[in-house]
Length: 89
View 1 (cartoon, rainbow, N blue to C red):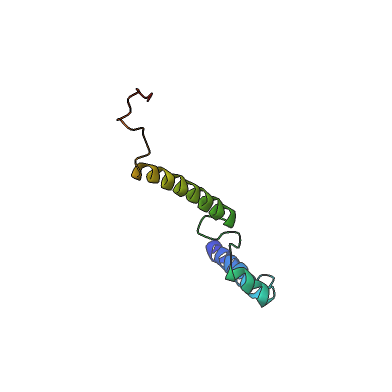
View 2: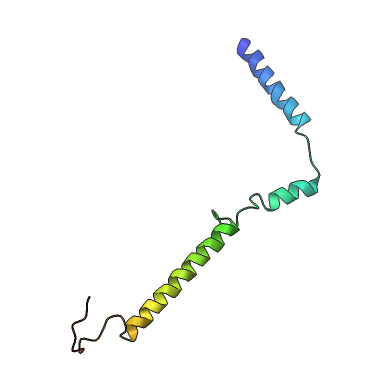
């Protein structure tokens, strides 16, 4: 008997919560939140500032590697071995 009363009490609370519901907002406010739940993120885990920092770092490294590769391609990465004087390494 007690379990039936308890079940009816829990069922009554659930029904009362369903009828009362939560405080509703304007549909425009709800749509705005649902349209973009994480407005501060541009990717799955980065903010716009993080993206710009990453792009700046990658561009910097790419240019430094470019100049290093260009020096090697033009054989300017070490002195000539044909010099008559010994060169420090």
